[in-house]
Image (cartoon, rainbow, N blue to C red; front, side):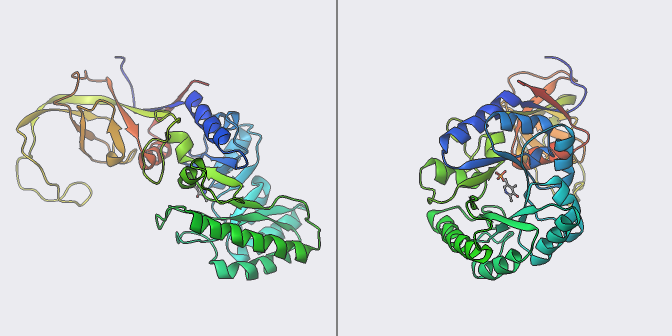
Length: 366
Ligand SMILES: *Cc1c(COP(=O)(O)O)cnc(C)c1O
């Protein structure tokens, strides 16, 4: 195999497009917003998702939306993390819609939109149990009433996030509650606006990748007409079970890390054991002398427990900030120095790989 200068992530854009297409086609009546935040707003990934039929791009950081716009991506952009009031003006300039759950933020967006002589759409977030962002259900009506009075804000709909903080699984119960709240909100707003925003669709955004299974099983409560999906399109996994979703590619993102040392060493350290580089006291199993390899990548670039060697005979033993230590005793071949070892990253590893400035990203299949 060829030599590799540095740790490299390879993104197969054709697989991402195919995954987006499969998700969109499987869910008629549900609009999909493709979420690129784990890739730090990669224009190539955004384009691949749009080619697969997603209706817009979701991002949690304005810097990423700015990058995507500069790259010429022409799509509706959703800001998925509520902006701070100080970023209201940038939000109105960059995002077509933002997710909001605090009244002062809505006010700041209204004021910014007034200054810029435009309007801004918000999706009001409701917490149906996961305890990340969102108003509690009984706070929603009062919130909508106050926001409806803001002259430059349009309430585009309501949404929720699940399986983020509280790991709560989307269900017919909690998403049914969202739909009920939306029905109440829709008539409330129509009455208040006296038909001014009449006819426009009132979005009911029923979550993220974790809501896909319910939808794919045909059990999504009627009325949910939008999902914001990142991980399942990129990794092909269910975020409830972390198992592959049938019909989706799981290998769209792979990591290759070059070997910088390879040899036989004892499996237990020699000398008094204190703490490793991260303050933990490591435990070792004595398996005698074993073949080991070190790859040029570390915790600064990746979550060691979040990468699975593609060769099942290789095991990740641990990592410091810049060295990844592997047991390769049962590997199918002994790598030469400079040759890469391939890994499949999970979401947390993918997040760090794209965030590390030391990891190269290659795109194939465009
Ligand atoms: C990250 C995020 C998403 C996408 O989540 P996935 O699990 O990657 O599908 C959707 N909505 C919000 C508000 C988010 O923060």
